[in-house]
Amino acid sequence: MKKPTYHILVCNSFRGAGDANGACKKKGAPQLMQYITEEATDRGLDVAVTSTGCLNVCSEGPVIVIHPDNLWYGKVETEDAIDEILDALEGGEICEKYLISD
Amino acid sequence: MKKPTYHILVCNSFRGAGDANGACKKKGAPQLMQYITEEATDRGLDVAVTSTGCLNVCSEGPVIVIHPDNLWYGKVETEDAIDEILDALEGGEICEKYLISD
Image (cartoon, rainbow over all chains, first blue to last red):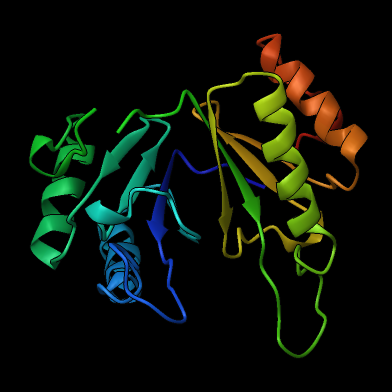
């Protein structure tokens, strides 16, 4: 296999009952994931896009993580947000706007 | 949030019908994930362990990925295999035995 340069994780966690803080899936993660995949492909990025179980920062959902940079982004709710994050990735920068603070 | 130093991904993919090559879940991924979590905690590693959807290397399942090192390990079928991989991680080394070749 050819390892991807970037690995974008998209939390797709859901709760069968109850609401709590999170549930990225309910907040639109599946649609986000599809858009990320399409957009990354259009940009020619060497990336794998993978759905995940709970990333344990539910209050920040929808959450995505970009490795190897170990960037954790939250409140990624729109295609525009994805565009900004991918623009930063292509530019070798961090998109501070959506970065989950330490 | 405090970002973890390491992020260990455990493929938990399954297929409702059909068999194909893969289905890491059927090959024991949930038990592996529990063991990784317990063992990493015992070792005091600063790690997040996350289940994922299909990582698209089904023939190598069960598959785990360790970031930020971008290490893709396959045929990780036993607790001994996990021990070897975590030993390597603690030693700052790569566990060649389970590495999925390029």
